[in-house]
Image (cartoon, rainbow, N blue to C red):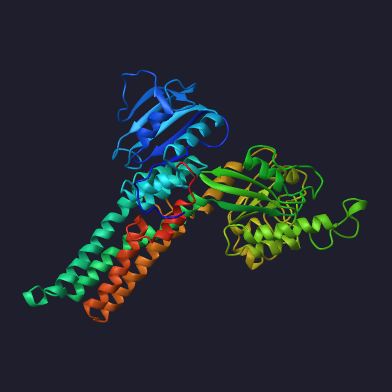
Length: 505
């Protein structure tokens, strides 16, 4: 989007989504907003005038003269500069949500001297006029795009200036340090003391922890903002699709007693604790030479299932989180051993499904092959046959570093709440919710740049480098913080940010 070189023109746009609805809104902003609006509608009560923040009943006219046909009735609201969203004169005309009426109003507004607003231009004008800083402007887009209440809360907090307020004391402390060093250089001949090395080190040391804590907030802010992908993997008929349906809370994936029912990836987006999570149900991972399930499966896996398994492995590689589903009534096979080894060091959870059958198996003196649900920790899994007393045989390194284990039953729902809690804890990494989080890569890069610049300044100070050189690092840190809120952000970055907004916002 080209950066506006002047704010003297008037822009117009339809600010409600395309299609029919109960209400539709046409927005105008700029010096001619009120005069153009007066030709689009006729106030129902002739003696009334437009007043700031007051809605007036009006008739939508097909043409601009007094004898024009009335097309619709509307509410017109005037917001006078600078007390509007854009800090300019702003008009909102709310009509019935007919695309025909909205397009008529917009077309006539353009004929009367307005121009069509670019994506995000209303918010960009609010930023350029100083009504919002850049983090608040980004939060407007985030609020519109929010899919969970937690995302909406975070965006609303950012719109209220939570991140800006968190940055302000750090920036002020940095400005004070820059001013102190500049004064020592500029007025060295006027008996102004040169700042001591220990004082510079102390001030940089005080600045670094809050800035590092802000940088660390990106771990949770990014997850709340973007969400995560969780792949559900395991052997056929372990109950992956059933657990998937339990987490989705509806029958999204087909479930049958026949192993290998799921042949392709099935995805669904859910919210756990306000974190958007895309669940991916995958085809069962079989060993190389499975036993025949029927004549059509004799000898080897069919081509469709092989493709499904290949996609399962791709989903496993790409997912941020992994949920390994094991069958409580079956011993671990070689494929499951390899699967456990593959997730070592990755965020993963083991769900031991069909746990409702374990007591039945024990009562029949069949034991619990390879799994002991009664023993917490890594010894939940064994490599051979086990009884109720515990698993037997040795454990692989992968099993000794087993991810968190949850006993579940997709049939009865037991353990599903605990599984959700484990997924949430794994997704957030234990990071606590706090105001003023970094939510996107641009913000994170600005803070990491500031931290790196402070580290360079500290190193230069420790090496007794002249203050002129230390100031270069301190200014680099200051410019990075300025770019976070938008004071020094280049126009091309601004254009890229606002071009991702919808038209009319």
